[in-house]
Image (cartoon, rainbow over all chains, first blue to last red; front, top):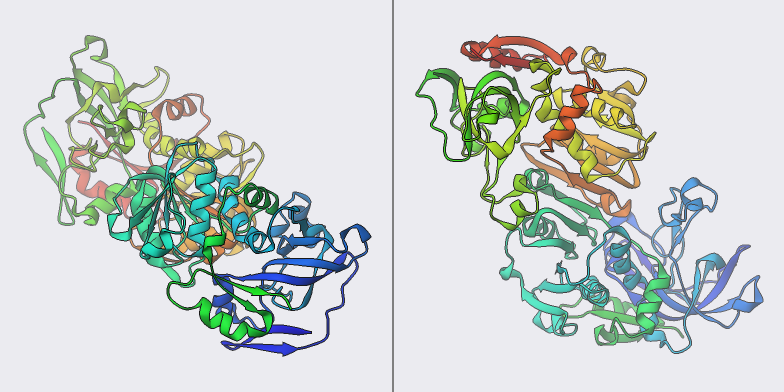
Length: 317
Length: 317
């Protein structure tokens, strides 16, 4: 089979044997994968990653201990916990200290003809939901995570900073759940993809001070985090949605004096994401900038790094 | 009358006329004041402060539009809001954008024979509560603020970092409300002042990683904040209780990956503080290192900056 391989900053497509599934795991054939900013960062050598990336996927189960799954279209939770520790038993597998993470930590990813995941991680794609739409389940789940951590009353004005892939998904998810979004970015053409009655595109230089009760930081930059703090009202909350890959130098005095809460936020649950996608509450098709076959992964990664590009998909063989 | 004056890093005691009270304000005679770390930082020139400090106090009302207050022993909320904005109307005067703050922002402080505060800020000291105990109401209220922002279930292990004045008060308040405190500091003799069945003194080098659901940062240092994050479990909370007067360089990746929440926390409500002090749930007398008369403020400030000293009180004339 073929698989994408990242090594020392370079992408290649390699041939290797099909993976063997372990007990409790399903063997999955890739139908469609999505390139995420994390994949680009892994390629650039953050975390010293070497291996096969890919954690946004839709695949078909081809082998499994439980025959009912075979032939099903699935996506899956990307964190594989030990299943036995206190965090796993509390339903927080995604925080298990010894977890593997599909395509990120100690587990080959989905940008491969075949890959494996435990059956307990799988989620069936509803019949009416297109594969290219369902492949957004992972980032939509990450956006849903915000609402699991923070209660945002309906009708509340929320600032979302960043008009990249994640910012555009976060804006839509929060709008679908009743918030009124001011989306701050530098790319009018990207923000236009999601603008609507509940999402207003704002220019980065329109930011005010102490304006919002809730600000979502999705720029991935240290500057974005500082601006998010400045835009937040006393007793308000900043949700840290994108990982900043540099040490951030932050003046904590306004955080303390204004009693601002900073909430780190990562992966979410797939169920709610698939529900939102199935009922059309989040429109992800306009975010697809390009499609490539798995064998064209080198070009696909190059395209994903170009300015103005949103989501690049990798289609299975 | 005499008053303490800070200017360009120097403390002096000056003579000046009694302040005139404005409508709605009470004229208060100082009975006892407490020197706080903020006062020391103001003296050192943070914020470019110049004027009379002092925000921990017990005084006697000597003049007031409402005769019932005259002769009463009082302490007071230190934030004076405009009373008309949305925040003031929601009961968040302490976040009013145009507030003055006693002895800190645009309002002469309590280290003065006489000073003024609006009557609505006053809290009567219960009859059985000693003046020297009640003078701790402000820092105890600041500790109570944590419990207004974060629900800590009874019996939960909480780490408090820092064995300064604030850390020792925070440890006691949280213990009084049912938490089991691990108090981390460098001064065994300070921690011994509050150690007991619910408060265990720990050495700074006993810190473990990802151990606590709740960590209170009360060291006032950038290093303390970094350590607090490292000690917090996934989905746990760090309460930022002391202001760090330098830009903090922080790796935000663990905050995001472990979905840690950082909660800025400042002043609290006096009512609960006075209740805790009145029922002896917080023992503050052992924290008193020295007492000086107001006219000896220069020596008092020097003493408050000495190693091993906890609380220094200034007694009214």
